[in-house]
Length: 340
Image 1: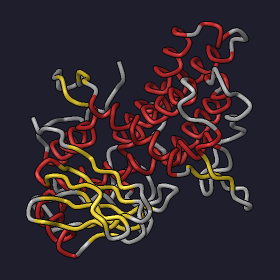
Image 2: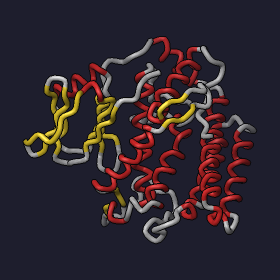
Image 3: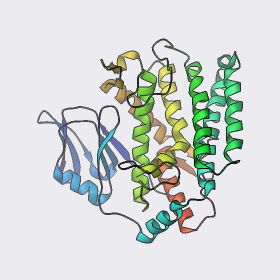
Image 4: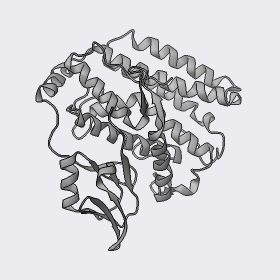
């Protein structure tokens, strides 16, 4: 099994990355701040404006290190990519199969998303029974379960999208009840994305964007085209297949955000409120969220299909590899990730 290396997050907006031998060097205002051995790094996520040297970008491309540049709100601006890996016949098979994909792929993906969302609600209800005093959580869990059943009753993509959308609306309708502390500072009125209009949406959108980029890199590393998916509509500039696979694990981002809020690690001071109404994480907020994400990536889980212990951070790679096996015909069905 592949080993999980370090992810380097650059949050200082004055930082410039260079290469010195086998070390990544971080310079701020011309002065060296830190250096790290290149061999220990798997990904570099850069939120700074000066960027990185051509030498560093070249080595990242050559060795398959994911170097990404982000806007402060988490939107991916650019990604350094080397030569395409994998067999061209794998991508050919991907294009042929996804041109008219097996409906079961779509059904299983949405069912897995709803099942994992249900898991989050059940766990919250178990840990804090008072959250369900009015029965709203139980009602939402039942609605999600009916959604899982209804997904398998249709092969129409638009119908499945409608079921997923209604279940998401019901879920985010009770999301505020999962927040135990700082309720006035962290109140979600609805799921808003571009731009996020409250701190909860800002934190969720930021994490979703970071995790989607991880899936994009993982898919490319096993030889698949991250832009050609089986569920999300094709759109220029969008990694549709990454959006398909991340559906299974959105609940991980939601759990991280809830934990940071309920432990009072994330506060209102960690956000920037713009005149337009948009809300973004500031540097301190991004640092807290990324620290929590990195800790979660280091946690050990037992993969339900492989029945092996893996680090959570390897999940995008494992799921991408399983999807590649499915496309090659080595397994009959793609096994979605299910929380247990």
